[in-house]
Image 1 (cartoon, rainbow, N blue to C red):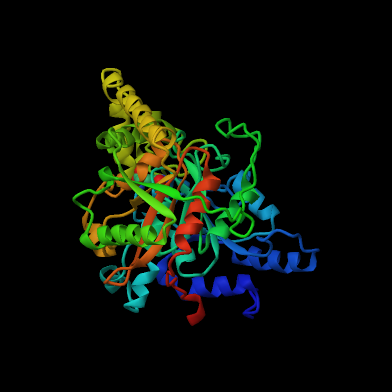
Image 2: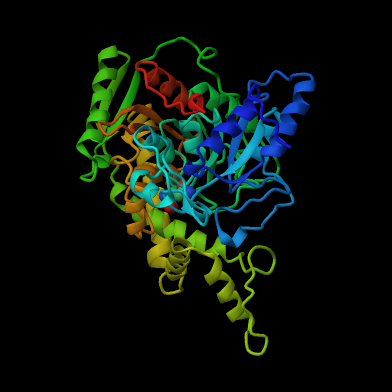
Length: 490
Ligand code: GLN
């Protein structure tokens, strides 16, 4: 039985998640085990990890042994992996307590966290309404961003202080901006992908949500370093990242690039002002210098992302045949169904529209007659974009770039339901960091006139994660962001 006393951190997190069920944050809860674990570790000798005893949430595409890992897909609705991902295991080893698996877009494709188990709602919507039934909810609740929306919403609402996400084209930074918290996508290869269900092997990066930068650092330090299980992990020994109090107080002036290519027409006046105002504010401190910069190959970035990600997706999704694991159709006609028809039924029944759309697109790009003109050409664009950024950092001595993350306030769930986009225009703000493997952080800046958080993003040089986070500390210490805290109202 679950005890109802609220003295424990885990109990408070559970109460808040249960009270705000309308946000649909979890695909699966681990409440019982979490309470037991908390009890157990409270009697053990406390280790000195700053993460010890903290309730956390894990996006539902990270494997947790014997626990449902669904990727918010019917295809994996009953999948319990026989092993735990490196990231999750190391967090557990540091004393983190896993309270649940968070809701997301199916297989992490999308920007609304709306998979087979319904949408995650943005916690900031609840500052304006108290949704009652499901139908009214859709018109008054807003999207939480995605694909790691459940993790972002839980941290944005202060149900937990840290949550795990994955970022293939923006899936940590986008929902972090929408839910008003920090979202950190480390350099590609800094953290192990072992046990993270693959979306796009060459883009996927595990990362974190938190309400301050030090927590991002604690979590990253806890999980980084070789595990012998991910060949794309950097072979350089990991240097622990320093928190704000540990890093040197030397205040070198920071040179920040403002890429004209991110100032797109779709960017709302209010979101553009937020970007410009922060530049003015930071300039006035005398510690930051801004330069306008160009990314010559930016116009091709979205196309390259679309083609490369769809191609890798088509190949990765082939493993879901319903035979080795996952959903298997019950609708079989023994007399005439072949392997092919059974496979088709299984996949038709269990993949959503977006997943099917991308598999179809990916297979098209990979056709023999298209391979060179789509896939290979996109690889060239990818290299050219990586070079554009490398030049800015190495030759023009730019320390980081400051850009928007999304173009406007979130739309309602009802509005999102009407659209049937396979890719989002907002991906344009985030995909470059994945194409080039760069570290990037989305941070909350202020509240829009309609009462939603507005975030901005900084992007830094490859494997300069420490420098990027130190710059973020300096930027964010110049203003006060009014974080949301729904947990106190439970
Ligand atoms: N929105 C992007 C997409 O749908 C990013 C996904 C991700 O980062 N997992 O491809």
